[in-house]
Structures are given as structure tokens and as C-alpha cells.
Image (cartoon, rainbow, N blue to C red; front, side, top):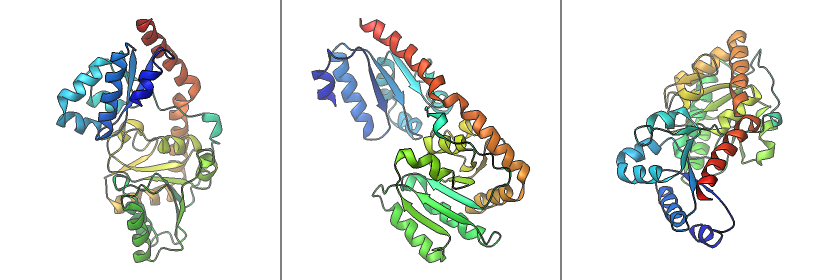
Length: 295
């Protein structure tokens, strides 16, 4: 990528570089060094719920990178809050979706049809969804969970399969694999309750998509999730790793139509601001200002 940035330096006015924690941070450092050598302005976009912890471990590297950019954007108030000490003028630009692609259906009476949509990775704790269903079978015999996502290769998918077998939930939990992005709205429409079980998170697009469809979201209260979901209004938040609490939240949604309707309606209203019609003008203004510096 650094080579492309150098070879094509006369073909663009401004670059946008995604910034993640861990080994991926080196990629951002390398590409931005190339952009500086090419005398091209750049905008950084921060991602990942683990970035604040990475910044605490490597404060000098993170400070140098963020302060080198014309503008630094973040899709969440969580990263904006946690990294404000590194750079005060972080611009909040939400993750955007094409809202019209997501058919909204208000869940006035939520059925125990659950869905989990994420890559099978340990940080997303997919086995927590299986444990939640195991507890729900005692109170809601008709509960069913569909799990959708690709295999990250870290053993999480295998652990999920093992958990399903051990719990005897072959009829209650379906592993469907990954689906094309274009099919996500229709797949989400098959369920009424969305489970987000992550241990580290920022502002996941999968949760935004579920909100757009009007699903009732039950999520662990980690990272940027409390900044995205107001507990009791746009979703129900539970402690990380707590299957009992997650099951109890699902039971409430199924048993309380007023709660289900409120969560469904407020979630959709919240993500109106995430539509491209609202987000694109923000990006255009940021890129125009950055390009003007390099002209």
C-alpha cells in the first residue's frame, strides 16, 4: 500500500488512512510516512475498541501519528472521549449505512428469534450467545438462534460448535456461515432480537444495521457500546460474559411488548443520523479542507 501511495502520488489530492491497534498500527505509520515524503495531506480514521489501551501502551507512537494528520476522525464518541488527551480536535463522523436498504419493522411483540452477526473471533465471544440460548431453553422452549459470520481462524468457530454440541442445542442454534453484504438486511429481518456478545468493541456496523431494521438489541456493555446504545431506550446492556444477564434481557423483551416496541422504534430513530445522506456532506467538507492545504 505504501508503494501504491508513492507511485500514484500525482493521482490524488488527499489520502484517508484507517488506524487500528496492534500490528495494523505499523501499516498506518508506514503509509503516512510515505504520504509525508510525497507531500500529500492525509486524514486518519480511528477504528477498534482496543485503540485506547494501545495508546496507553504506546503513547509516543500514537501521539506522533495522530498529530501528524490534517484531520483525525472517529466513528464513535467512545474513541473521541478516550483519545481526546492525544488530540483535542477529533472529528466525530459516524459509520455510514444506506438506510433505505434496511427495511424497518417495529417489533411490537418480539418472538424469541435471535440472531448473532459477527466474525467468529474470540474478542466477540460467540460462545456467550450459545450459553444464553442454553439458559433460555428453560424459560422459552421455542427459542432459536441463527449465528452468521466468517471464520477468523483463531479457534472461536470450533469452540462455538463444541459448545452447541455439549449443550445439546443442535435444533436451537443454526450456524449459517458468512453472507454477502447485500443479504444482511433480509437476514436480519428474519429475527426479532439481536445479540452482541463482544468483549472489546467500538461502534460495530452490525449493531447499527440491526438497529436500522428495528431489531431489539441486547449487547454487552463494553468499549463504545454504551455510547451507541442508551440502556433501556435503544437496547439493553449487560455485563461482558454474563449469560444469565443476557438471557434475562431477552426474556424481558419477549415478555414486555411495550419495551420491545420502545427499543425497536428508538433504535431506528437513532441511526437516522448514520445514513449516507447525513454522513457524506461531513466527509466532503473534511476532504475539501485537507485537499486545499496540499494544493
